[in-house]
Image 1 (cartoon, rainbow, N blue to C red):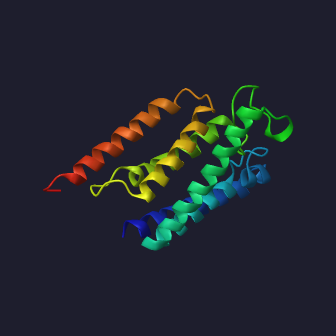
Image 2: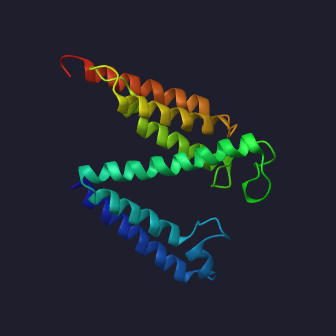
Image 3: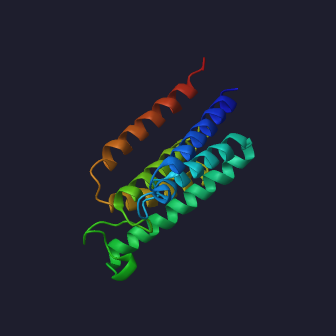
Length: 181
């Protein structure tokens, strides 16, 4: 299968990278990465592990993963809204004095998390053919909170990417509604 081929490629990459780390004069830097950036071999081990977990998930497990991603995004959006409304000091202070960063420390990271969560949720938020249901209203409420948190990051690319996500979701939704699809 494609997943097993990708898994073999990931293992080969990790082995070659580990050999490279141990042949390097600064093997600790190659293993852990630069300072606290997480750019070393250990980061790629985590990425390969996340791929392995994702490749083994069953259909019911995907909803649990989606719930975890959405919960993490909601918590970060809530912290971003709190940061902008209350303007706290200390660990939750605004980034550069005017941008919300949630619990991630950087508005760009928060932007990526919130855009990813919105992209995952927008298909569940579209109006089904049977009309409004309470679940659809709840999904739209969650998307609204995520969008407010996204706005408070004050990042420039958020709006164009959000527009692309919404247009793509509407196109897919309309194509599913066609009688021959």
